Structures are given as C-alpha cells and as structure tokens.
Image (cartoon, rainbow, N blue to C red):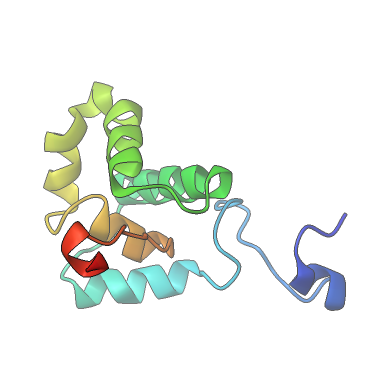
Length: 116
C-alpha cells in the first residue's frame, strides 16, 4: 500500500534501500557516503547503525527537539559507551553530523532573543 504522495502519484517509481527502511524519500546511501567523505569520515558499520537509528527515530517523530534526539542516541548506544562512543565516530557531533548524513532535518527552536 502506498505510504507517501510520491508513491501514490508514481507507484513503483521509488527504489528504497532495504537496509534503510526508514530513510527519507530523497536520501541515498551514496549521498551519505559523499557527504561523509566531504567531512573526512569513512563510513563503517558503526556509522551506519547510528544513521539507521536516527532515521528510525525521525520516522516516528518528524520534528523532534535536539534534546530528544540527543537523549534517544544516548539511550540506544549506551552499551557501546553512549555519547563518548558517538563523539568518537561523529567528531562534529552525533546529533548534528549524524542527522546530516542520515538525511534527517533537525529543527531548532528560536531563542527568546530571536522572538523580540
């Protein structure tokens, strides 16, 4: 059954990567590899596990806060070392850099200064 407007209008036109069932529609493994290479990262199984976890989290909540993503990653990867482990594989930050590579848009709320 079609799940998105794209699938309704063009059934069968999208080829989803079976390894990344929760990936955003426009995301590809190749785009993540290119972006990672531009950031000096050679993606391995550990990176892909975080990318899958981020995509799965965003599939359930399209507009989570930075804190919610941070806490979800800490909980999911606690046994591997939590944030220390995650910063080891995503040195620019597991939330910001991980979301960029996973194709997940992270929204930040405006500061009180921006509201004036």
